[in-house]
Amino acid sequence: MINRARVGGAGSARDHGRVSEAFEELARLVAAGDVVVLSGAGLSTESGIPDYRGPSGAARRHTPMTYQVFTRDPLARRRYWARSHLGWQTIARAAPNDGHRAVARLQDAGLLGGIITQNVDGLHAAAGATGVIELHGRLDEVTCLDCGNATGREELHRRLSEANPGFDAQVAHVNPDGDVDLPDEAVTGFRIVDCALCGTGMLKPDVVFFGETVPAPRVADCFALVERARALLVLGSSLTVMSGRRFVLRAARHGIPVAIVNQGVTRGDGYATLRLDAPLGATLRALADRCAAAPAPV
Image (cartoon, rainbow, N blue to C red; front, top):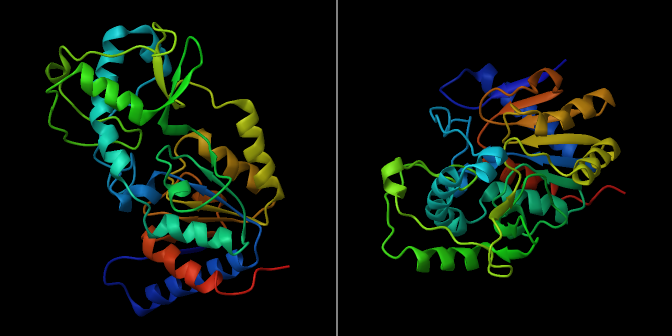
């Protein structure tokens, strides 16, 4: 039987009892150890980074940049870098929230077999987690598509600021990939820069765009983690795209319990043995308080 519970609204005593029961079941699952975490954009919303499809992103009509458009269309590439130049300032200022810190505490307590994130914001590492597999890369790194030179995003931000003095378009929304919503006229005249090493190379953030393939060795490492796990814990992901949902499918195929903590329905709900619809920060803080204080399983 699947345990499903939702936090929110006045509710009945029975509803609150189901939430408490689901949380206790989640705590027992995590306390047993060897849990692999799969996190999504919903984990970072409390850090001020909106998600695409959850409560803070449900009304968005933003279409993420694709690799094909980025590499083939100079105007689209200019629009992307103008928008991302502004959005990066929000991503760079973001700090880990209670959810990220709780995951790091669970790892420190020896309860996690690994952490896979679909996020590109680097907040798991900033919270102290180690060995995180960043499925879609990191936004704070930039790669030249011609010579392969890698640089930090802060360096590119400085170069773009120098090339575009006075560029201060107003940002309406920032998306999880650091892109923002701007009218086309706001980016007219924005100048992009090429690779500082080879002089002509096209620069791209070191993230997997839509239409681009996650490196096969990275996916294989994730599958291996999931297959060795005692349980898979999904945090803040709607599992809408196969990039993350495939790990839920793999866990289910191997008979590995799947627990999902997310605000809103997910496309993995049918495979979950435990489903908790609740705020991530408070729930994970309570989970870490309960589980990380106990001795790690042998």
